[in-house]
Length: 85
Image 1 (spheres, helix red, strand yellow):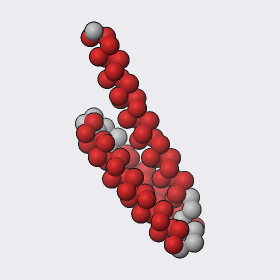
Image 2 (cartoon, rainbow, N blue to C red):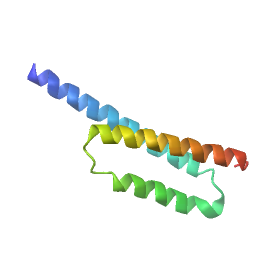
Image 3 (cartoon, rainbow, N blue to C red):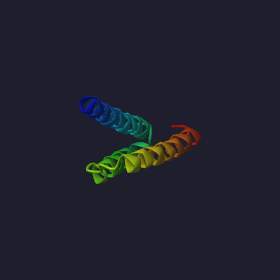
């Protein structure tokens, strides 16, 4: 039974990590639509945000950060759409 619990925790970690990486890729894709003069700075800000939270092991905090990131990404995406990018 303990072995099954370890596998479940590992699966949870794996799925959470996959969600973080998906968010990162989505953010970089959206940043690629930004005006040329803002792309590099935006990509650096995204990378820095990920790096700042790289060692976070609190699953609840990670879920919160993913949710917050998705909201911020949606706002950026909508702003770029309104600007025609």
